[in-house]
Image 1 (spheres, helix red, strand yellow):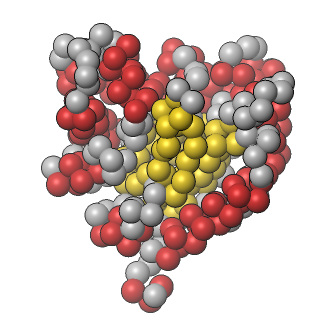
Image 2 (cartoon, one colour):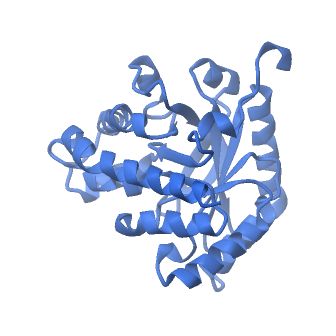
Image 3 (spheres, helix red, strand yellow):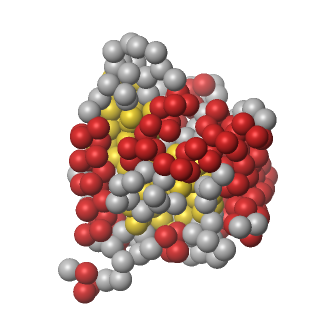
Length: 295
């Protein structure tokens, strides 16, 4: 099968210098909640999410090395409308979010309706899998899911990106978020995936020395390149978080909220995306380039 195509590599989704400045628009029910919180009249139609995702992709993708999109709300639309800039790659979310216990994502499975070969035909260079990590759930199940996901990616020559996100245990014992982030990396940072999307230690808050040490501890668990996500990090300190994480071994970011969350629910989102989100993303990309250049 491999004779039919050349496998993509991390170089195909990175900036020229080798760092990653990656944009996410694959939020699903969480984005609907963001629109509700911004005062959008309920019920918030799927088309509201789709229109925002397509606009964000069209306006922001020229400044990103790659954009991450979901099948549920926007993949077909952004491909059909040519919303992804020629200079920008495409990642397809291959995770099925299962709601429960009052939250939009209580568990995750591989979305078997996302065919890796079809994704490649649509222009994808990579797929991404969210992995929820709870201390009281079996490692074997997580590792098996990641292995299956990686094999699906490789069958079509796609880069595999995993996104372990920690959650409190199902049965309520103490939850130390910081040590759990490290434990998740120790378990999943040595898998066969190509890239690890990690939560920023301490939510990016605190003095640089403490944050740097936490990022270095995370880096020590990794046998693959890693980037940080922006959920849980205030947008105004995310650039600092990226800079410190890169000093600690990270290779960039894959983020959505830090770039466009403040635009959700705006009267004129396209203008706000251009005026607010574009400069933000440009600056974050510069921080990535600076971080790589200092190595």
